[in-house]
Structures are given as structure tokens and as C-alpha cells.
Amino acid sequence: MKIAIYPGSFDPITNGHIDVIERSSILFDKVIVAILDESMNEEIIFNKEERLKLVSESILKFKNVEVEIFNGLLIQYAQLKKARAVIRGLRAISDFEYEFQMALMNRKLDSDITTVFLMPHQKYIHISSSLIKEVASLGGDISSYVPKHINSLLKDKYK
Image: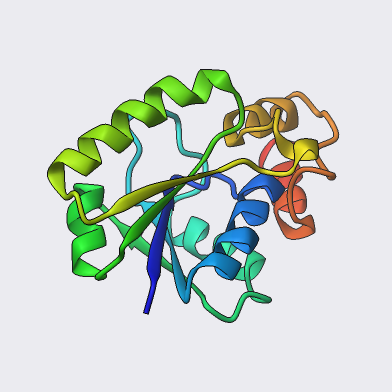
């Protein structure tokens, strides 16, 4: 069985993430969306249990996709899950340098686990969870970038 891990904070999950999950689900027998327990790089607005619920509700149509929370080193988690690949989304050139460094480090830690880069659909290429939170906090319309249930939650959170 070909298993892939798609890690991230998913705070919140966006339609760009879902697009990458959909394409990953076609390429792999099983995809585990691995939600980071904590993120050192950004302010989290939904706790891990909320993110687990939001992601789970967003991916119901994908029968070979699971959602879990993890912490620690990604490669160790991938080894534990017997994954052969790590999925990473690339939106723009600015993502590439960081993702390239991470892929090389992960390869050094375990050369049997391959990093696969997927670009979201062009209509989502400019969005990120951070941008979604910023626009939502200022009352902007994010409805075309997140699932309906997340749009409603963000509106409530930023009233």
C-alpha cells in the first residue's frame, strides 16, 4: 500500500489544501492529513481538536484519506505510519526555497521517504491560511477560498 502524509497546521484548511488532498488521494492508496499539534511559525486560532474536526468535515468525500494530529519530527511520524511519501503544496516561488530545504533534510533523515510537490489549482495559488485569517479578520469575503462551514466559523470568530 502506498501511503502519503500531507502535513500542515491547517488553521484553517482552505480549498487549496482540499485540492491538493484530492489529487493526492488519486496518486496514493492512503493519504494521512497530519495536523501539527503546535506551530512555531504562526498564530493558531483553532485548537488542535477544532482543526481535526474542521479538516475531517472537509474531506468526507475522500474514502482513502484520514486525519490525525501529530507532533515531533515529521520523518519519524512518517516512519511510524509506514508512509513512502510526504506531500507538500507549492503555491509560488517564495514557497520553493523553504520546501526544498525541508525536502533535502527529510531525504537525509530517511532516503526511503520521498517528498512530492503538488501545486493547487491556479484559482487557489495565491491563498494561504494566514492570508485567509487576515482577510476574514478585516471583514473581507473569503467564501470562495474555504468550505462553507469554515467560512461561517471565521465570520463568527472575527465579529
